[in-house]
Image (cartoon, rainbow, N blue to C red; front, side):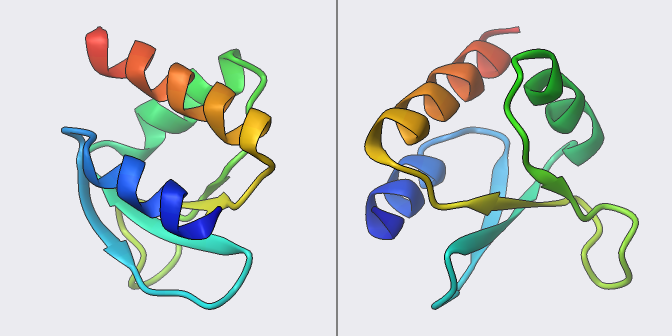
Length: 83
């Protein structure tokens, strides 16, 4: 699931970088972490906003979920992208 998650994240216009990880999460640098975080909270999707952490400006930490969870997550990100 991690590789599928990474591949789909690469296709999003607001994703600038995906940091390599062997953990159950990926760190994603975005163009506007705060706005994306707030949008996802409104969709009842929880990610960690790392924007205020030193060396993590613009980053969100995304847990690798189950296939249905990941699909819901990506549908929400696509909706954000359409704004």
